[in-house]
Length: 215
Image (cartoon, rainbow, N blue to C red; front, side, top):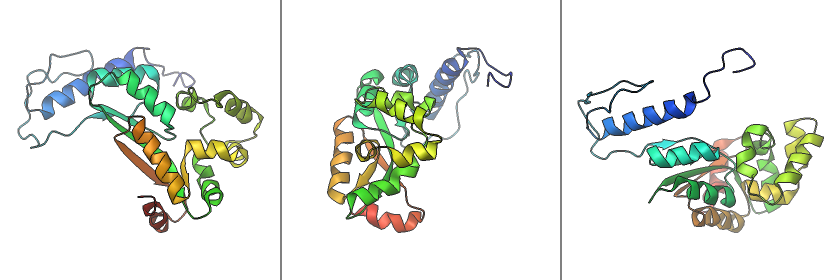
């Protein structure tokens, strides 16, 4: 946004997210809207019909400050791929919520040949080396090597195609059924409440058969 001359005040995203999240959660509970803020004004508003079961409101955020904010005003987080166990555990610690919803996403491929399955998942990791994904990687032991590998790679695609197999294993849910089950369990063990597998193969519907074998 800065490059095109429309940079907003530094506090805008966090404050907007805070006000919108508080307002939405309050209204969904059938309560009068909170006091008007700088960005949201639904003071005293009551929606006519509320859901019998109030759905959790989770925030799709990735950085430590945004995750901490989610712990203050929402029911949890949606963590984009890659969601390695260390990233999940660190996010849960920052949430400081009693029972947060923690939904994780990862590129996934399952097959009898684990390495072949991981190679299928590589395109889904092409952008992992870009700056926006740094929070996902900071707690990993190979974070520095991964950053160096990206600097040496001519493109995101080359970066993903040439990264070590062990990195792919850690940054995806790809491998044999047993390997993927173990990786899913590790994410749950780190605090994930829902683990979402993103089919990495071109034929997404055909890929579902392989993914189902990791149940």
